Structure formats: structure tokens, C-alpha cells
Length: 359
Image (cartoon, rainbow, N blue to C red):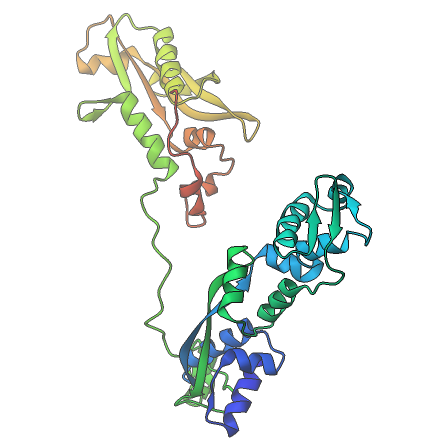
């Protein structure tokens, strides 16, 4: 509707001098008119120039007074011709209305504020404050003294109004042409691409700001692993020593995962071709409500150590730990597709905790 009004107006006239006045005269929402002007300007149907005006807007308190009236008038109307006890008047009015109204009515010499009794000094008053606020609300001008008085009472605030003046552009037409945004296979097959008008690229448009500096949960978990098991320049997942037993392997694994914040562990006997005994490692996933396998481990079979020339009393414990499942448990992720892959929500990177304390 706004677009038809703008293009139709310019068909027989040279210019829309003020978008605000244009919208008001036609009962259109100015924000809708502004959006249409921006769109038409982008397609060069019109040429738009900024208009800025300093104007006054009502505060919430000012808007309230346009409905209820000013506090001084509310107080005046609450006083009967014979007067009213001060305490009774306070009960009839809102505390803020009584406080402001008493001060303003006394200042204007409308009432006599006695210690016990409040009486009128005149019989009739006009609500000038409400009238001025309504004029500002309707976009009418008032004098500087009145503005100063309303501003002092914090009933109005300055605001910059923004609009446009509009003229015909190089591509002007009474009706916008539908432009194609994509060249499709069907366009090429039918040959109608020759008659199509394509939307121009807007190389001046600003893209979304690049948000960087956030670490993916997997990178954080990898850092934890490095801090626990990285020795000099080698990432080791085995320990060899004299007299090692299965209890040593259990102790190393419990210590490792406790450093990650995973204390609920279980171990299950398993078969591995190079280790005996062997164990699968499970940790409890709070999100899934079940135990999840997170690694494998075992003690190297003696025949595997013979080619290495190790003494007979030397034992080697070893383990293989996944990175993804411990990370899922640490961050409460119940679907591995939410952790990595082409469908991962990048918001995950920003929402996960910046660090883990007490580990």
C-alpha cells in the first residue's frame, strides 16, 4: 500500500518533500513508508535524501498526564468547595500525585495548604499542562518558555526525527518490476533468461560482523588432555615400570578422568589382541542418563614385550581414550552430531563455559 502510494504520487509530481507529512496525510505508518523508500532507493526507482528535525517527545509520565490530567488539576478537583482535611485528601490521591500536585497547585496559588485543612482559593482552573502535552503529542509547536517548564518537570525529552525527501530515480516506473534473484536451470532451458531483469549485487552492504575468539569444546578438552598427559614433546598413553599391576592402571585412569571432572567411572572386562587383562572404560552421562563407553585399556601381554628387550619383571600399562565422548559428558551434549560435523550450531561455541573451575 505504501509503495503504491509513493510511486503513484511521483507519477504526476516531481517530489515528496517530507515523508512524515506524506504518511500522515494518507494515514500510513511512517516506519512502513521509510522501509519502502529505502527499498525503492536501493533499486534506484527513487532518489532519497535524509531529513532530520529536532522535536520533543513525551516521557512515560507525560503520556500518563495526557489521560489522567496533571497532578495539580487532579488535586484541585479532589478538593470540595468547603475544603477537605489534609489526611483525607492524601488517602484519595496517589502519593506521587499528592506530592507533585500540592507543590504545583500551591505555586500557582490555586489552593491553601493549611496544617489540617486544604481549601480552594479559586473556583475553576484550566489544565494547561495537559493541553500543552497533547499539542506536542500531535506534533504542534509551543513556545520556548512552555518547553522549558515541561522539560524541568521531566515530562518531555528531545529526540531527533528522521525522514526523507524523495524524487524519481533513473529506474522509476509507476509499478515495480519483479526482478529475478537467481538464474535457474529452467531459465536456461526455456531461454527466458534473455528477457529477465536480475537483481543487482549490493557491494556496499555490510555483512554480519565476524565473531571470533571462542574455542570449540573439543579444543578445550584436548587442552585438558595435554595438561594431564603431555610429557615434554610426546603425548604418552602408556606407562612402564617394574612390578606394575592392574591396580596401577585403574589408579591412572581414575586420576586422569577426575582431573577432567568425571568421577563416575566403571570398568568392564574386554578383549584386545595385544593386552591381557583388558578393560573398557565407562563414564556416566547425566544428559543421557546412562553409562557411556569413553575408552579402552589394558596391560601388555608379556610376549609383546619380549621383542623390545625389556626385563621380565617390567610391565607396561596402556590405554586409548576418545576425545569426543568425554567432551560430550563434560558439556552435557547428548548427540555427537551436536558436537561436530556440518550441522553443528555455531552458537555452541559461544554458549559453552569459558573455563572449568576446581578440576
